[in-house]
Length: 333
Image (cartoon, rainbow, N blue to C red; front, top):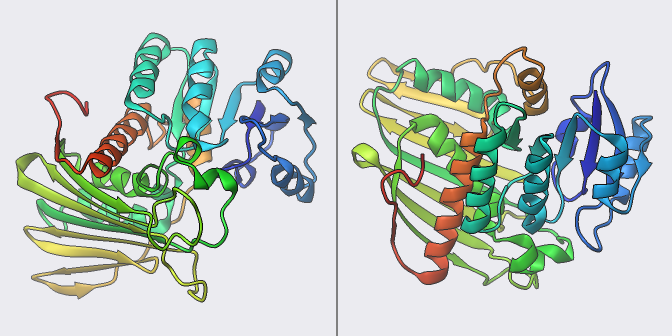
């Protein structure tokens, strides 16, 4: 199975850690002007992997004719390349966000409808596959907290020194789209409720000379059946913190409350508090391969990828315009 990688600005590591017998990375190329793919080359070299390098990803695809293309370039170009792959009916494993505008997302939706029987794509929502999130999902689906009424999520990262493309909205796309989109996906995944109303705010203050990058953001979502969800995002995690990220979820239901914090799951109900054993961690790229080889469905679908991107784009619009956005019937389907 031939794999080509476009760009080196995202989570290509999902692919490297999941390579198995019969898979070969045959070509690598930048996906954006000025993108340095040296880090990808070096990471592959450490694993004893060699691939032909191209300056033009289109030429690479013409020559290599891959079964799978991994897209993780400057975030604003993910959608452009995904559209190109949809037109060519090539399976795509794509960094989020999969589109930089609602117009581009609609083009992707329309293209996918035409080719969905001939190819598959998914966004890199690999955090779903962490042991603590998989465990939380099983608890929710088994009814341990009853009917979900409230969801609070948190994404907190160390900022460090980011590449220059993070400093411009037209290449970075925004912190809600890059960081917050994970938690938007969690909200959809856990609740399976339609998004009805969005209000968001964001700020560039304290971004440590990172130009247009937003260092903080807050989103409020009204879901169907009067379920409410919140999302807190920041790049303020201290450099001395033991981990790069601090992901948290609190879900309150009619029979109990579940929290995910520090890679652990806590559940409290009328039966008392408990810390469940974690299920085994999985890998999103392994799941993706299972889908395209007919061995099982990928947990993250194209529809999930489109929905999370749409809600993130609308949340960014709400924050930019300081307005509440109400979704029309069918907008998030």
